[in-house]
Length: 87
Image (cartoon, rainbow, N blue to C red; front, side):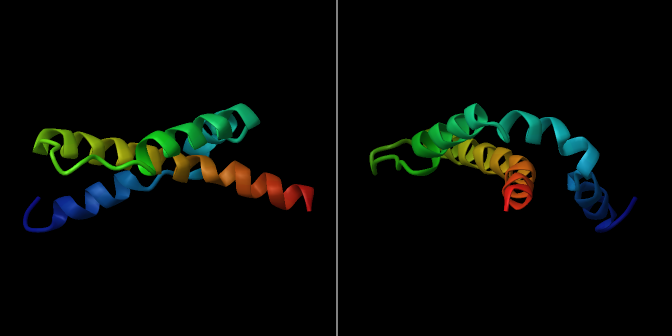
């Protein structure tokens, strides 16, 4: 491996196919799962740290934000599909 080859491998590993997302969709596609995601978004995404926050707290919050956004992205499939099935 040389140059930017590693980037292609990482990008391929990031792509989760539909079969690998089923457990995310089954968990967070439910009413209870949507409530959990809403609470995570409220407490992590929609709040801000104050200007006195140390760098390590800001880095930690950014990691939390990334995790919550990834969870919501993976769960979105069943929610969108469920809405389409009902219409």
